[in-house]
Length: 214
Image 1: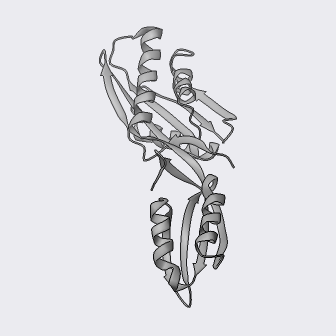
Image 2 (image 1 turned 90 degrees about the vertical axis):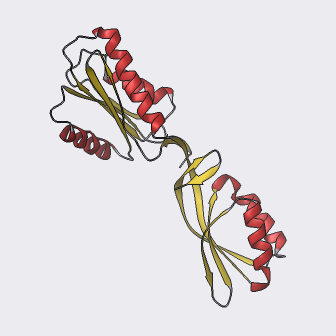
Image 3 (image 1 turned 90 degrees about the horizontal axis):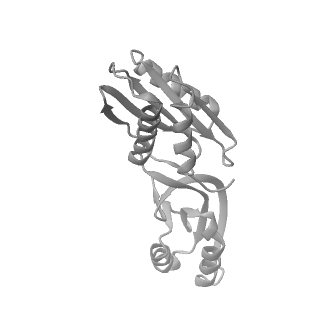
């Protein structure tokens, strides 16, 4: 697992140039199967469109890269969309740009500019985020440490996803893996090692400007 950049809460973007309408849609995907399903869903939604051109990049190493001109002249649609994704440094993203032909030909340059704009703007509308590796774990401690631990976690901007109160206090925490070792050491020092850490899982979380977003 490694950190990467992708998108969050996709939003479409549309514009008209010389009577042709271009509609950019994008989706966070984690497999080629998901990307193809998204492309099919857009083709079904805009089945009366002239073209539904697409591109996607999959994998933390960006190893899977595909594009489709869907009937537009070669290298005027799919590749420009793919290049936008690559330029932004994104992966696990699929972009589909729909075109309703308005009767006026745009030429190769016009097509490249239009497909580039639709892809770029729909990605930016969707917000580009860091997909970072987070560790989910429990900490268990005596009630006497509640105040100091809560203050510590708040000051360090550590996300507490759940709190439970039994014979001891148990907090469920989501923490950027890069910060885990330091936070663990500080909590051990804060409680004189009267604290228990229980690993749950690693997963990806969306982060914007260093803060978790859901």
